[in-house]
Image 1 (cartoon, rainbow, N blue to C red):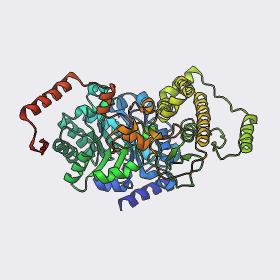
Image 2 (cartoon, rainbow, N blue to C red; image 1 turned 180 degrees about the vertical axis):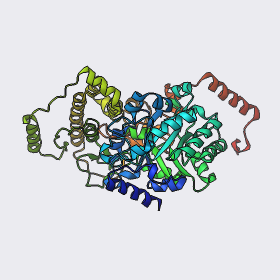
Image 3 (cartoon, helix red, strand yellow; image 1 turned 60 degrees about the vertical axis):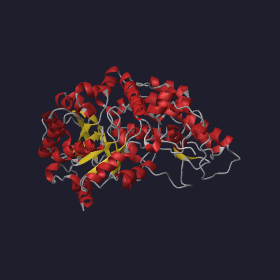
Length: 551
């Protein structure tokens, strides 16, 4: 029922050429609201300056067209006070209209604008469903910021999960979790006064019982959906560790059945999504870092024999989307949507099965054709692009994530990418050319090395873990790999690793491995706590179940 209502509203928007806004539809709450946007099971996480429109568009592009609206995406995290007080900040981070967002907000005027005035963020044609996330520590700031985006999104989200030092200094994100009263007041104010629902993204606390009470506080204040990141605030960097899905399951089992819960954490590959849904009982699964390194993570792999030129499958049956293919899609989205121009004409991606004549003809046609006109940017134009186009400012960081295994092998690509500057699209196109050349070399070398090997569906982990310390900072031999691929980074590498030309997750060492490797050290406070626990255990003596009886 709710899903049909959401589809009818969007269809009405398309037919009339006007955006459907909260002013002409009833505000829903909780599960009714979730069903109205199609009950999405997959969620692209909010990431600071990394979940902007172009990246959302790229991620959705790997789903079949009818299913692209089944992926819920979040905007990057915005600072509520800056969003209200600084028009340049607002206009350079969120671009739903071809003109600036009016301030103060006039919802009726916005609702009357034709579809042709819509631009990128929240466009009903290709960027929905969309939640916009803010960090805040003041109810009025949050409400005022949310009013600016409400006509262009499905819900507003409150960030209660950011663990970084800047969040601590600004008193927002995970550093609000000691002030439940303030959190409740912000959620309640938006629940009562905003035209779209308010949701919240949180981290777990020290105990599952306290986490439950924390979640109840948000829900009772009016949050329609809670996203639960299964890590505590201190779990970041080398101390990231594993998300505790059992705590999310505890919330699922102890909160009212109508509560909508999204689970976040431990998603490295597409198969992890279903596993997380089953183990946590969550309504949907969110991916952040997994998506940054592999924007195809929400897409099912194509059937065997239907890989085409974009998907590579090895002799062992394991595969993934090629980096040159993904970067091509990304660059075409930048050309079309961020720059408003037609993408360059491109020759087909290389396949080892291509005949030499075919490849030579394609290369000859490409070289004899008219050279693509280089765009000339004055310093003023470049500065304007840096200020006003979030899709361009994010490009370099995205490509370093995407190409991480490749640039570790091909330093010329790494160096060329490092030299790219915001708005210099020709420099990024040059990186794409280098990536295509590197992938071609990798594919030819692979076919040469495995020419006599038959294809098999069996997965051989021997090759997948080689040189992993250079890729992910993990040391260890095959004999040291634990059986459980979900509790050890070595085992995760064996499960997830692909050749360097294929998109793949970045596997962090778990804290124990990081300590053993020397990349992480315990604080004095933590050492003292562990020493005290060890001393207390010796004083008490072994528990009955720990006593070994020899006889």
